[in-house]
Amino acid sequence: MTRSVVIQQALAARAHLDSHAVEYAVGDTVFSPAPVLFITLAMITLSERAHAEAYLARLTKIPAALAALAERHRAGIAAGRLPVRRLADAAVAHFDRYLSHPAGDPLRRPTPAVDVPGFADQRDRLLETMVRPAVTAYREVLASEVVPVGRTDDRAGLCWAPPGRTRTPSADPSRSPAQVHQPSARRVHSARPPIPGRTVIQIGSTRRVRRRRTRRTPAIRARPLTARRRTPTYDRTLTLCYPLTQAGRMREVVSMPAAYAQSDQFRGARIHLCDLAGLEIRDCEVSGLKIVDCYGGDVYLGGDFERLVVNDVDVTAYVEAELDRQHPTRVLARDAASSVDYRAAWDAIETQWEATLDRARLLPEAKLHEQVNGEWSFVETQRHLLMAGDAWLGNAVLEEDAPYHPLGLPYRGMPPDAAAKLGLTLEATPTLDEVLAPRLARMATMRRVVDGLTEAELDRVCGRKPADPYPDREYVVRRCLKVVLKEEAEHHRYAVRDLAVLEAAA
Image 1 (cartoon, rainbow, N blue to C red):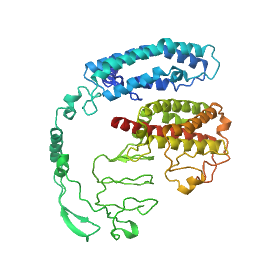
Image 2: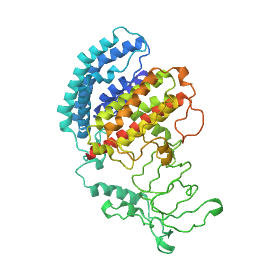
Image 3: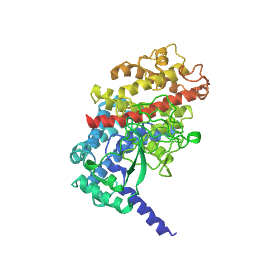
Image 4: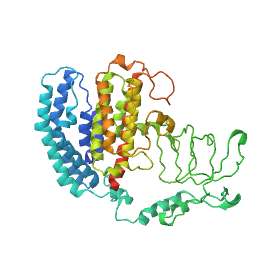
């Protein structure tokens, strides 16, 4: 391979990156380059004098970076890559909050671990004379040039595949749903011939088992949504074929209740030829779960899976990498090993929660008590994180006399009587401010602990377990604090996911 070939390949790769550059994105999260610039810089650990000097040098480069981002936005708009207006508005609001709280500037968080004379004064001077004016100018570009041309949520647009609309007809907002759907229907018909008829056993709760000939064809699934019928309903019953000694034998048919809890009757079972549309499986052990030859739309999986295979493709590593990319704090929490790592992780957690709480306060109080898809509300999430800090930090690590605050909310599987013994009031409906009072106090306690953390303290064996329902075993400070970090990082992910839904509906 010659030098000219290498140069050509490098230029081609650069052109490809430029055509898909994230600088075109506008928003208030880590998907957008300007907010992530402030988020990542605030996470830097300054363990040496050279690190502190390099940090000050980075601050001087922020104005040029923001000016370059503004030019990228202009280039993207000129090329037809229009951002969603709601996200552009959120970006403006994000920088308005930043500019309105100079004392709480996240870029003031990194503090040298060694004495660096004049560091704080020089940092504050750079923030005041260079960074904040640059942020003001960038914010003005967003407000005056980007927001006015932003598209609505229901208007299709592809930022990452120029020229998106000519390459993907379904992205054309002028096409009706029927027009968009027909090419897909024709492809289905040409790709798959009708499936021969087969015998299906239909079970009803009020009728005898009967055999029925059905014919399943792709054409049924390719009809427009307004003309489609749902798959046959089996009156909330299941066909269960159990393996081993009961293989092939049908159990007595009974109606399926609305919910099962604390049951192992489905362990090793086979669910066959049933309508499971809308089925929800929550907080269950699913090792070895197989979903084979099934079909449907909007299938959602969420949880802690050691290995996940979709259509014979192992997607475990991809999912983890994408989550880490979207939520870099979870990497800091997961990989924390030394006392410095624990401090850096907590710095990032404090920073992201500060911004998210500001974001949540923009919503009406009622929205903060609203659950999205059956998940905890924003207030309930704060209550749960209060409980996590009380249990793993206040009780296990610090052995406080009264570690549990009554507003704490434990994991869903804790028995009510066990929660009552801890003094928890599960039925309480506090306001956000009422929860934040003890919650922020507990976060401040965590700050004091990590600031004074040593390697010896990390390896110390705790004198208590987190709570009575937890098993009797050895709990080390390292593990207990990591649980707090992971709880904070993961529940922040859930919180911002649901906040986006609440904001869209507000």
